[in-house]
Image (cartoon, rainbow, N blue to C red):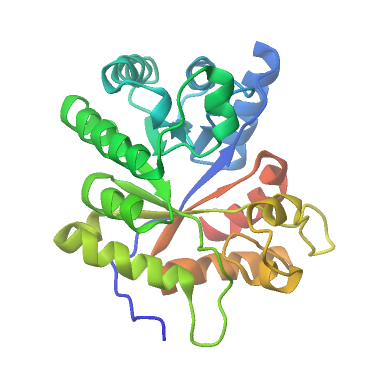
Length: 281
């Protein structure tokens, strides 16, 4: 049975990812549109072959006035802490303090091979993540740090060192008395101890309806969770379905049940999710 969780309720925050750079004009228009739709932060991923995170985030920050920028998430194994801290410090200053650093261990072996970087073991990648987080927290304490993951060692590091914890929703859908998300949050709480109430809990949505059908496109979620049926995927915390009011109610439930107040959606969901934001803010 899932453990009971108590928490300090926090204000909602909403983020949207951007995976395409394009021209400066197009990027600036996208950023201003997200700001106007009510999003609090725009995220850029860190994958070889994708957009370069720091130049893109700089352009976003300089085109907006209230929208925060962040990484979801930096592959920490690609960076030496001192060199990453230099880029973080510059963007923190250029954005007038609107930057948040999201960190992960890195997991795509092909990207390491393409970059000519040896692929460390899982344990080595977690150790490097912990070292990087500690270095940045010491040298740039004013920059909020998110750590995203699902495994025990990553979540233990996040609970003890980060400001924001990105939860994947688990590798299974809730079923009967089993609630993988609640279990992971209970683990975080035990690891965080007295600082648990200071943490901001986040979940990333990978699928939601973009029209009036109420049906989400499960393509991305199927890729991430290939072992789950469509019915199980529809019950996963990272998937939203139904009408706009129903989705808003589900997100309220995330905060009431789990203490999750920070939700990120994909770029393709921005317009549809803005209607949900309007019901929650």
